[in-house]
Length: 352
Picture 1 (cartoon, rainbow, N blue to C red):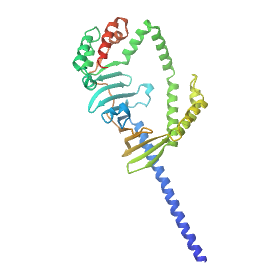
Picture 2: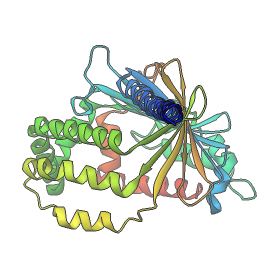
Picture 3: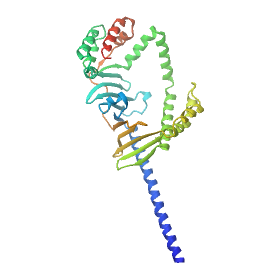
């Protein structure tokens, strides 16, 4: 009898030991998966240069025309040795819109240097002109006519798909000109100066938001390893939002004197979010870095596919860009250009 009890006890001990070991292994696996994913995501945001290629699939309604054919490419980069502060002007950003392999639009901000853009009017016209009367010839005719006006010659470069930019110093010069002519502009400049004086406070707020977001994300993001390099992610929206509000309510109230929603109001709004609503995604990691992210649209089969690569080619000032002068910009804002702006409106109507 005692022998039987010993055998049963030993058997139960072994079984419990195996079960606990299995549970422990699962916990270790989940912890390791979480650490791997968080480390890979952190490396993306800390990288000096990162490139995101975003495409959509199974989009609803009229948006389905963009399935797989259109993509948005976002590239961010920091100047060498710079901190990751957008407010200090260290960061550069480039946004491009592609149709298949055709680069239709480029918008670029390069640190403190200025902003630049480029458009492929022929490619855009070919897309929107299918089945209609709009042709590149009609568009170019209107733009060439408009470019004949004083200080609008740069429109020829836009027509040819060249880079056109404006420096930060030119924007400041034009703003100063407008200050003397337009009271509303003077008010705007005063507001900008006030904002500039509070950059340190805003930068601290940015750090607070980032830290709170990361902490809430780590708390509520559920991570499971599917294959050697693929992970599934799930984030309960209501719980995550409530956690974030709880962490941010006090510091934001202390940093800003502006009226803001109370914690009770925010909690009530978040409480109206369905408890079943979760953001789901699949994530792929290669050599410790995120390589791809699939983000599902709630309550549908649609998703965004985001290719991630870092380091990437840094965002730099485009070569041979046509730089706009204060005179060029004054024509657009000055009363003497109303006739030219009417012609510009006529040209843009051909695209609509």
